[in-house]
Image 1 (cartoon, rainbow, N blue to C red):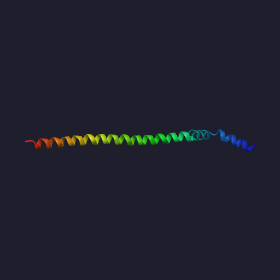
Image 2 (image 1 turned 90 degrees about the vertical axis):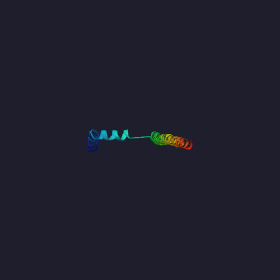
Image 3 (image 1 turned 180 degrees about the vertical axis):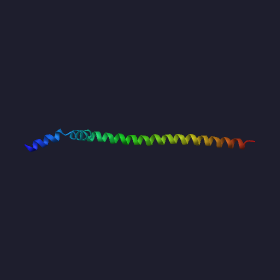
Image 4 (image 1 turned 60 degrees about the horizontal axis):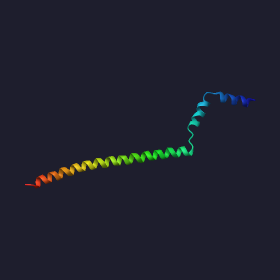
Length: 80
């Protein structure tokens, strides 16, 4: 009889329910976990790719402007 009273008291406590709720909400099955990992890897690789593309375009534009200025200066200085 004493065990049932203790058991009922534990289940009636306010701290038990939120603690169990947190455990239930944190459960991830293997499919969901792999989906989250796959999305994180895809996001990381996408950021790397678009960063690379941005810098390649930026450096390409800058180098084209520099080459145009050099070629323009060379043509003007070479002609009489």
